[in-house]
Structure formats: structure tokens, C-alpha cells
Length: 242
Image (cartoon, rainbow, N blue to C red):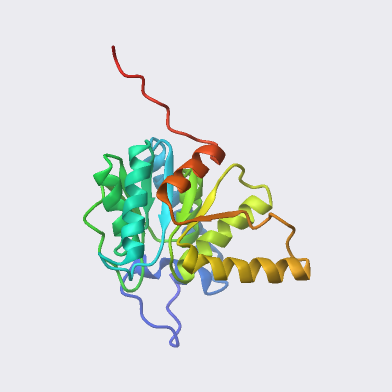
């Protein structure tokens, strides 16, 4: 294994170091082959863990909102409503919005999952997870979240949340995924951002009308109706026994 260059910080461990080592540039071919095999193993492990999840929605958002904040409570109510409708709820497994959505899912009687990512500064899993899966690579984690979700629910957040919303929008624009709703929850937060991007991009001709494809609302009930109308994979209604 190649040594870490002297101008790079020493990683806390192999897991925290895995993606940094992969992305820092060309390496010995056998070293990169070994890393590629580990990436393949991570895909396999993710598929084995999530294949039986059933219809699910993924909730993204900032880890910095605490209980009592309006966005925390919105995420909690949204997680609960989707769980009541039969969806599993997946988050990044950490605090803030992730905790709120997982908490709401458990309160709604649904399955609450967390797909964590190993980082140099580890975050503690929130206490509202029925199942937890950890990844070394952001891109593997994102593939799993798209593959096993029926929709993305985007709560207010930072760069990671923006990354997820535009990754999904790009996949929809290019036809890689279909009938995959993106719902931006928190119109006061997302409204100015989406309007500025949409208006500027339309004016310059870099996107066409309707290509951004993001539905925005402050209502968990409206979000649920939109997902039910658009998403390809839906919960199967259970017929009560007579």
C-alpha cells in the first residue's frame, strides 16, 4: 500500500481514509485494483442489507437543527406521516434532521433505517434507528439511496443536501431514473435557492422548462400525495381480515 504523502493529514483509520485515498490521484495499478474490489464489496454489502427494504423514502437535511427547531419538527412530522402510509424512512443516520425523520418513522410505526458515512470526524448514530448500515464511499452510498428509495425528501441543509438534490435532479434530467419525485420541504429555505437557479439557468438556456423537477411544500400531507402520484414503487395496501 502506498504511503500517505507528507502534505496530507494522517487518517484516523483505514475506513476514514478509504475515499480520500481513492480520489487523491493515480496510484500503483494493483493498489487501485484492490481498492476497486473493496468498492465492489461495499456495493454487494449494501445490496444485501437493503434488498428487502420495500417502498422507502430518503430524508436529507442538516445535522445542526436540534429538537424544537421548526425544521426538526417538520422532518419529524414528515417521517411519521410517510411511515403511517407504509413507507420505510431512510436517512444518513446522524443527528438533526436525520434524527428527527427517523424518530418520526418510529412514532408512525414504520421501519427506520440509517445509511451512515465514515468521516474523519465521526458522528454518533441517532437513537431512533431500527437498522444501520455504514459506508466508506459517498458515491456507493448515494447509489444505494437512489436504488432503494421511491423518493427524496429534502429538508433544509448544507452542501451535502445540495449535492443530493442535484445528483437526483441530474439523473432524472438525463433519463437514468424515472418517476422518482424530489420534494423540497421548507419553502422559505428552498424557494429563493431554487428560484435563483431555475431563473438563471432558463435565461441562459442551460436547462429547459420543467427540467429541475423539484416539488416544494411545507406540508407532510402534500408531500405524501405528490410521492403517491409520481413514484414508481408504492406500498401495497393491506386488506383487513374480516
